[in-house]
Length: 462
Ligand code: HEM
Image (cartoon, rainbow, N blue to C red; front, top):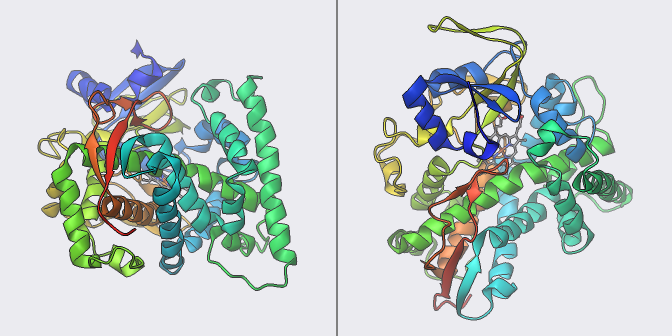
């Protein structure tokens, strides 16, 4: 058993090297805890689809998430209740709601790439991660969170978001309530943010105007648990904070990786442009529609391929609840251990994806749709989802804790890619490391900064 710093231990290269040395199951020490990694399809099944009495997510993540999201939501409630909360959110992410989000997100992005300071003029260079983070939060807040939240983003809300996000650091796995200055700011921001949402909810309830949008806040406000208890205002607020945080980093780093790859491979960028011209037509001012966006296979493959090579959530952990034998090995994982699944490792393996290190969206033209790979389905309380037993491609996880934001994330990313490609040509800036290096120091794998690209406006009348 060896001791590794967190940033190294989370790197899929580290995992792949260990597989060569020790096989799919091995234990190492991470932040003072014994972590047993179990890779491959069997490992994913064992960990992501383990029974509640055997493996548990909330005992790992609650120390980190409860101070940020607040009480009585997500990992601060029994799993069955959280599954109900996931079901409520899923209603707000149904296709009928997604359709209404398209013009809202389009408007935000058009406005940003036309007027925001990083894109002033006809050409320039831009540090991608902070810019893509802004585009992501503007689009997600305007659509999912509702117009009142979006309006507040430019003022108080941005600072509160920043302070909350700052509390979301790996050190808090070990010292969640330690009086670090950022934890103090986090706790203050949590109270104020809950208040902001509660005020919006109260004002919506007291207004005589009928519901005028499909956002998730409305859905949460109108939801009732199976036992007949309505979702409380503070629970609705907590779920909205959770939603903001859950989607923000994953989607924003994915869009940065996409842009970095496109800058590296202008040929693919032009293929995307041609696909758009063919499907959407040459009138760049024509509004996007949900149906058109489902008809862009190359854009879809660019997103898929980027998530294969750069899945933002690289490690998924569960607490072991009772001694767990690993079939065929004679080993038993004791309850003092944490289990770690890293489905990302399969995405980086030449065994499953030939020349895995190459970013090649075309490879998906001959691979079955990942959704068809997910054969076994189960309902954990929030609708049918994949158990994850078979798939070699699981950027959105599997089983009980599987992502419910996948369709939203795909829609958001497709709109971002479409509008960026339509407006700009991107090129690499010499010396930019973004395309080659990943920063594993936070909970999300992201491009190592500096990660600049050069942009040049196409001759559009945007
Ligand atoms: C590219 C974008 C995204 C990726 C790659 C991603 C990935 C994941 C993964 C791997 C999990 C499983 C975590 C685990 O098993 O512990 C997960 C769970 C989840 N995600 Fe996402 N996600 C993305 C976007 C979003 C968005 C946009 C939302 C909200 C709108 C969202 C909401 C959630 C929620 C609520 C869960 C459930 C957590 C649980 O049950 O414990 N995600 N996501």
